[in-house]
Length: 469
Ligand SMILES: Cc1ncc(COP(=O)(O)O)c(C=O)c1O
Image (cartoon, rainbow, N blue to C red):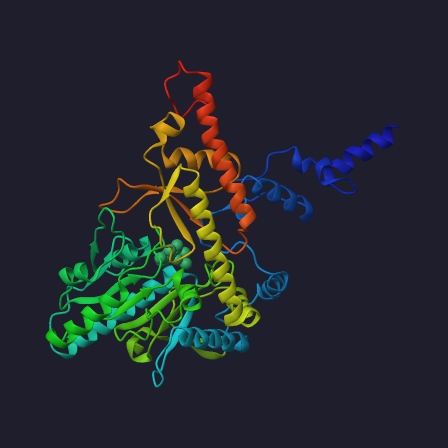
C-alpha cells in the first residue's frame, strides 16, 4: 500500500503515466511573467495553452473581422510544411521567391496592368505594410521630380477621405507627410472628386482612394477622381498618382464586376494593395503591393542585401517572415481559378443581400446603404423602436454586447469625422458564413428584441431600460 502511495505521488510529480488532468501542472499556477526554471512535458504545455485559448472568441462566429478563418485541409498541409521557411532566405528557398513572383504576375494581370508596362510588386505582412510602402514610393518619386526641377520639396502632403483605414494616418505620421484628410458628411461616407480638388496642390504626393472602406464597405469615387487628376495634369502639370487601397475590394470587384474600371486601366492609378488574408481567402498575415510600372518605385528604395550567399533585392519594412502564407495564396489561386473566386464572391454577395433583406424585414434595422458593393453590411437601428418594443434608448452597442452572450462577434462603432453621430453594427460576410448561419443570427437578434419587450411587458413599472435582462 505504502509503495503504491509513493508511486502515485511520484507519478503526479512527473506527470508520467497519468492523464494530463491528473498531473501537478493543472493544479499549480502557470508561469506567466518569468521563464520557469524547468520546463514541462509537451502534452501539458499544449493542454494548458489550448484550454486558456478557449476564452477567446470563436473565429467562425467572428463577423467583425475581414480576415480568413478557414482554409482547405490541403492548404493547411502546405502551410504546416512551409512554416519553418524564412521567406527572406532567397538563396536557400529560391522556388518560394519564384512562387511569390507568379502571384504578383497573376495579380498585376487581374488588375489589368497595361501591355508594355513593366509591373512589379512584393508580398507583405498585410495591406498596412503594402500601403506604407506604396505611399513611400510616391513620396520618393515626388521628391525626385521636385529636385530635378530645382523646386522646394520640404512640404509633401497626401490626400484621402476620413473613410480610410488608420494605417494611412500612420503612414503620414511615421513618414512625415502632411495628412489632408477629408471629413465625411451625413449621408456621404466616401471620398468625392470635388473634395479631392479642394485639397490637392503641387506638393501632393498621392491621393489614396479606397475600394471598399473598412467602415461601410463602400467605394470612393475612383473614376471621377482619376478624371480630375488627368485634367489637373493637363492644366497645371501636376502629375498626382492614385494609390488604390483594395484591401478587401481588390479580391472581390475583379470577380464580381470585371468591367468596372477602378484599377490600372485608369491612367493615374499607379499602385494597388490587397490583403491576401481578407478576400484572397488566406489566413493572416499576407498582403500584396503591385506597381503598374517599375518606374514608380525609385531604385533608391530597393535594398540589395547580401545575405546567406546571394544578393537579395528587398522592398519591405521587416526582414524575416514566414513563407507559408505566400504559398497558401498561390494554392488558392491555382485551386480556385477565376471561376472559383467568382462563385465564392457571388455566394458571399447573395448571403449578404439575403441577410440585409431579412434584417430589414424584422423591422428593427435599416441598412446604411441598400446597394451593397461588397459583402459587408453596415446596419443601424430603426428609429421606431419605441413603437415596436417600447424602448427608445437602445443602441447598437447594447445589441453588440448581447450578441456576444451567444458567441457572435459583431462590432458596433461610430462613423469617422464628421459623421460620428451615426453608430452602426458591421457584419463582414466570409466564405464560411452560410445562409443557415445568417438565419441563426437573425433568430438570435429577434430573441434579443423579444427579451427586451417581454421584460417590459412583465415589469411595466420598470423604467424602460436596456440593462434589465
Ligand atoms: C480598407 C482597408 N485598408 C487597410 C487595412 C489594413 O489591412 P491589413 O489588416 O491587411 O494590414 C484594412 C483592414 O481592415 C482595410 O479595411
